[in-house]
Length: 325
Image (tube, rainbow, N blue to C red):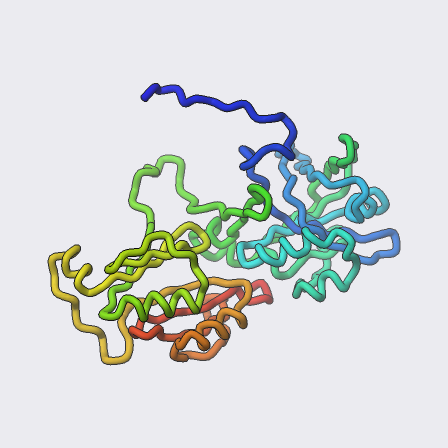
């Protein structure tokens, strides 16, 4: 194979890029109108253009949208950085350009907190906030590029209290049509990229049809690979979950199936995050999941409920607590 890959020319218009070679970080931008009424909109065209001082950022917006009208009227905005738990919320807001005012915050479960230096509010459920005053706004066809000087920055306390702050920030990016992607694992520049990466979690069972059927009913994950001894599901986020027979386990490992911890549970746990927590819980219960621990706030900052699948593997359904802690 040649060392130079064959290249294909695509149109220069962003509307024709699929997938985009320039993924765009999704943010929630808050503004107020001349009467002080707040507004929130999902945007994905944002960048730092000067480290400063002063630090200057830019975001793009359709000129006819309320966000553009507000920044031109009041010259202030806040860039709120959502984590992966707000993917669905951000998408709903992005599809609702006509929605305005306080109602848009309330119906999407977003809590307004006062800005430190500007009138637009911060969003408590987001993990970082960049407050700006407009320095310039420039039209490019139907779009407006808004340049802002950063006046205040605030972040969740977790970003200063744990080693893996970038993992907690959990930014995500708009790719194409209805697709987003997380940042992925952060690593130092001198750390090799060739180390092992998690690919699939495999659950062994004496009844593969029963266990595979449970996960199909509970989560509606598409099947990627299916055979008499092995069924693998595609899980959002790129990692897989599979079930295999005890015969396959013993064939692969050359060992007998180990004894369980007790008659009711194994030592295996699947920790799953979801935006629709109540819906996921209802599906697991309907599919036959056995309740272990009810939905409750957990000390690590999530709310989670625990169930057992038919083989006694533990399933945790969780999402980040809405207070931003």
